[in-house]
Length: 272
Ligand SMILES: Nc1ncnc2c1ncn2[C@@H]1O[C@H](COP(=O)(O)O)[C@@H](OP(=O)(O)O)[C@H]1O
Ligand SMILES: [Mg+2]
Image (tube, rainbow, N blue to C red; front, top):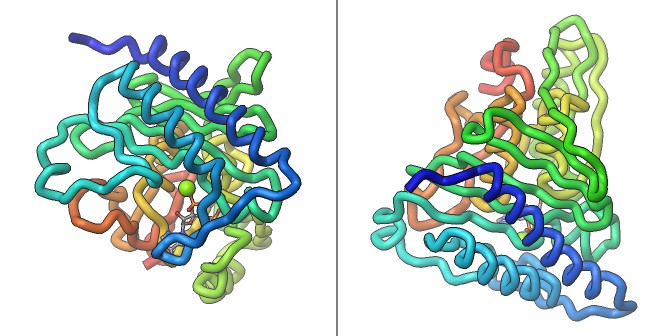
């Protein structure tokens, strides 16, 4: 059976809207409960509500396994048998949600042979979608109620400005050396702080050049963004300058990675 990816993406956007509204209902409360998970990261009622809506909605769309931050993690022996699966972060940027910065997202990736082939990211406060991937032959940004706009990454030249996406939270100390190297190579380096997968979206739409991430993240934090940035002409590289891999080990922790808008720029000497 062939999949109609354009129809599928429309349904994914509807599902994100529904989950986003549930997240915003919690966000509008003066006081919502925050629980610390075993990895010491926070989780709220909004994460759980979004997870339940997305899990049920995805299975109804395409009945393949769902791997979600708020679901159960099957052992690798079971996950290895999957040819396709949904990889989901129902609320990426929970710390942003708790700090009320508005910069949190829903992330849904369709994985095929352990590669993200389609991604949808939704920012509920901005009411903005980013979506795309190789099966759609491109990537787009769309505000609710408006037409989609094609997005492309931008070229990056050593003599010019380098605009770098950085996390607002822990993990910035590991970037100090790298940013010094950037400052030696580029005439000007500008840092843009943003929460969640929005950093990858800013590279995908050509607003920024690179999002370096050192320190732990999980596969559901990167998969949808990777599909989108690849559809827009960029790449997500590990420290060996190879694409990130998925579903290859028991743990879903990513290595350090670099989202680059211009894959032809001379990154290797800077990043390795
Ligand atoms: N110690 C840790 N282990 C695993 N992932 C971590 C982590 N610390 C941060 N992250 C990941 O970084 C994401 C947030 O990135 P940022 O701070 O740049 O917005 C978190 O997403 P969640 O909010 O979905 O948990 C989480 O997945
Ligand atoms: Mg999350």
